Structures are given as structure tokens and as C-alpha cells.
Amino acid sequence: MFLAQQRHYSQQNKGKDSRNMETASTKAGVLSLLSLLEVQARSRRTQPQQQSRVKELKAKIEALKVQKQQLEAEIETHQNLQKLRSSLDKQCADEEDVEMEEVSENSQLLRLMARHTQLKDLLHAHHLIGGYDVIKTRQGKGVCVSLATAYEGVYLDTYNLEIDLKPTVKISRHNIPPFIPVNGLAEENDMQVNMRAFLDALSQHLNAFAGRKQQLKLLKEQHKSVEVMESNVLCSILVLMFKVPRAKTAVLCTLDYTDHSRCLPTRVHFECEDKQLSDSDQWKKNHSLLMETPVHKALTAMKNMGDIV
Amino acid sequence: MSEENMEEVQMLEAQIEHLQAEVEALQRQQQSNQKDITFQFRGQMQDAIASLCGRGPGGEKERVLSSLKEEVEEMEEDLRRQAQMNGISLNGCNARTLRSSGSKVVQQLCLSGRCSELDFQVEFKLSEVKEGQKSQRTISDLNVVLDSNDLENFSSFVSSVEESCDLLLFFRTLRTFTDRCDDRNRTFQHFQQKYPSIVSLPGGCRSGVMALNHAELSGCVLLVRWSVDVSTEGGVSPNIEVLTKIPDQALKLFPSWPFGGAAEAFQSLLRILGVEGAVESIILILQQEV
Image 1 (spheres, each protein chain N blue to C red):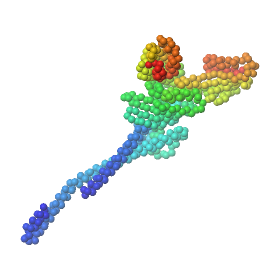
Image 2: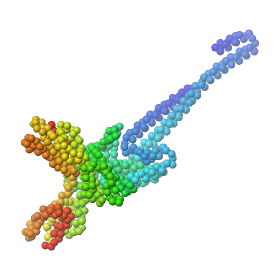
Image 3: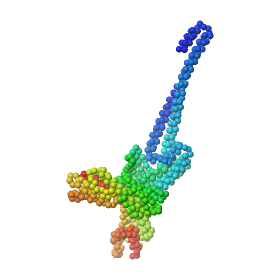
Image 4: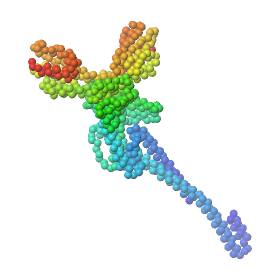
């Protein structure tokens, strides 16, 4: 448009003198200058946006770099720790003395950390194998012990005992059920002199009880056709009613667990209207089975042989 | 100029994408590292890791080091106490996390240690399942290795315990068994030191046999056999009996001597006087002059 106007002006000023020509060209120059300025103004408006976008991206890159370095440091530390722990394990297995070679603060810290993981694992292992988890209480004047119970791989209840050591060794508190003779066992095993013998005996009783209780639970779950006629809190007596297939009789089975430190019965007795049945070879075998195998397993075997329903 | 900017922006955006991918890969690796329970840290250990990785204020390292040292020393003391109270010393525990998802964690554990003079190694799988507030722990695939040659009466128990995965029963029984064996060895050694001319241990303490030789009549030997039997149920029972090795000539020469009924006589003495009393009585008889 300016060019057209330029031509217009120059055409209009054709007949005029050079002064008019100058004005025309100046005017043309101004117009082109104006157009240039307009383009510049337009580009300046878009440029700051681009600049701040670049800044934003650069800042994000820095943040990501920091995050990456952090993660790499943590992963490397983890790997170093694992290596150190493995070499510590090997040293302990070979019963070598743990050496302290490097003295830098970082490697000291790393070594301590590796030893920490090892100790934590060992303490956990003591707990897992049924250790007494002994804790000192009342500034060394007492101890607290835990007695873990388990049966056939399943961890069951844990019982706790608080024992005073001073002025005399005696049991101050516990959460053991009353039908377990804690004080009797303490006396029998001379708790004052041999704490471990007492704890071992108590643990045996508790585990036997837990085992009998667990057998009863599994029996009820797995053998719904067998009726539990009688049982007690100590699980030292069990009376079951078996249904015999084909015959229309039932067998009443009494299991006595008079040795409370065991989870197998001391006596098994069958009662049946059909005397021949209870005297048969097959049921003599069942008698042995019930004496030697946990009751829920014995019943499974008896079912498989078709002796009971 | 805008073109240059656009190029720069594109380059930066590409760099960011690349970095993000790297960070994600590292995060995945860290997550898988953290599934290993051994390396899940809390408390002092968490501070220590932070200080090693440069997080947290500088100059903190000394404090972290000394706090961790204190905690490690407490744990060493704790371990000694457990070993003493449990009668078992553990010298190795390796735990490998096999599976760690939401409510279930499965680890493979390998423990090694010593009970009295018996070395053992035990391997098993430990599963822990969380059900609300409670969690149930179960052991499976139990494998036991005992480092000893003379354990025939222990091996049937070990097979039974491996089958039932009763880890706690194994260790209770192991402890009781070694306690009874230690009782025997102590008693044998006591008598050997007290009556060196009469008492001998032909197979060493651990063989379970103590030989009592008559002071004057060589060839006349009373053997005290003390075995510690273990039932498959884990019941430990010491069995002590006396066997006589008397040449026929001696029996003919001294018919009044009660060697014939020695075995039964010993059982009665055992019931009345206990082991040490019974053995001492027999030794005193043998000391008497012919």
C-alpha cells in the first residue's frame, strides 16, 4: 500500500520541482521506517515468552539432574552396603576377625551400617527359632522373657513372663493361662539357680498345649463329620464320635493326654456296640495310628482307608 | 531469532525427556532394592543413609556416626544376652526376600550356629501374611544339617522335624539333647579324674561308654553305657545301663561275686541313688581288694 501511495505521491509531484521530489521520498522513507518498527514491535512481544520458557526448561533440567544424582548416590550406597555385608558374613562364617582397614568417615559409617544389618538379622533369627527375647527391666533388677509357641510350622500364641532378679528371683507377672503350672515348674526346675531349665520346661508345656489346641482346631476344620463330644481348656482330654460306613454303628473314641508336656495321647480307647469291630485288626491299627500321629492327620488316614466317614 | 529459540526449546525438551527416563529407571531400581527387608531402614540407619547420600545438613556426619555406634554396641550386648539365655549361639543369618507384595512377604533364610559343641545349619522359607491387625507366620521347606558324626539316635528325629517344619521343636530338642550329653560328659570326666586307675574312656567322652576295670583282676570289665535317645516327637531320654565283660575263668574262681546280676542291681541303684551315686557305688566295689 505504501508503494502505491509512494507512486501516487511521486506521480502527483511529477510536475513539481526537486523540493517536492524530496518530500515524496522522505515520506516514502518514513512509511517504510514505520513498517519496520511495526515488525520489530511484533517480534518483541513474542520474544519474552520464549525466553521465560527457556528459563523454565533449564530450571527443570537442573532439578532432574539433582534428582538423578541423589538416586545414583542412594543406589551406589546400597550396593556398597550389600558388598560389605556379604564380606562381613563371610568373615564371620570363617571366624576371621573383622578388620578395620580404611579409616575415612564414610567407610567407617558404611561398615557400621553393614554390621547393624547383620546384628538385626541375627537378633531376628534368635526370635524366629523360639528364643526367649530376654529384655532387662527396672535397671537390671528384672527381666522380661517371651515364650513363643508353634506347631507344624505355624507360629501360634506368645506368652510373657516378668521375673524379678533382685532382691530374690521370683516371678512377678505373666499372662500364662492358669491351667499351666508355672509356679510348680519353677520349683521343680530350681528357677533361682537354673533359669534356663525352668524356661525350657515351661516352653515345653506351653508348646505341647499349643500343639494339642491346634490339633483340635484343625480336626474341627478338616473333619466336620467327626463329632467332638468332649474337650477341655487344657486340651488334655478329647472324646470323639466316629461314624463307621456300611455298619450302622458309631465308635466313641477317648484320647487322654495325661502327659501335659506332650502333644500325643498317652491313652486311646474305643467304645463300640459292635465288639468285633473294636477288636478287629483294622481298628487295632487305628489305635496305634491315634497314639503315634497327630489326631487330625490320623483321622485323614482313617478316612482314606474307609474306616470312618 | 525466534527460530533459534525454537531450536533451543526443542533441544531442552528432548534433554528433559531423556533425563526423566533415566530418573524413572533409577526409581524402579531403588524400589526393587527396597523390597529386600534387610535393607529397609528406620531410625538411626535412615539418618545414616541420608548423611552418606549428602542429604541433610553438613557436619551431621560425626553425630550420625556416634549415634549409630552407640546403637550397634547396644545390639551387640543384646545379642550376647540372647545367646546366653537361649543356650544357642548364632553366627550367621542370611535372608533373601523372595516375594514382597502388599499383604504377603516370603523370605528364604539360612541360619548357622552352634549349640554347646554341635554346629548346625538350618534353611527354611518364612511366609508372613497380614490379615487386618493380625499377621500369621508360617515356616516351610525346612532343611537341617548337623555337623557331627555320632548322631544316629538324632537323625530320625531330624527327618520327622523337617517334615513337620517344626523349627521351634528342633531347637528346643537340640538344646535339651546337648544338655543331657553335656551332663554325661561331665560325669564321665569327673569319675575318670577321681578314679584314674579304674575308670577309662575307651572311645572318649562322646562315645557314651565308660569302662570300669577291676583294680586287680584284669580282663574283668564293667561297661557303663550311657546313651541319650531322642524320639521322633522330640522327647529326650538318657538311658544308662551296665554291661559286664567277665572271663569265664573269673566267674568260676569267684562264684559268690554278683557279676551275673550286675545289670539289674545297677538299675536298682540308679533308681535309689541317681546316676552319680550308682556309678560311685560300683567303683567302690571294684576298688575292694580281692
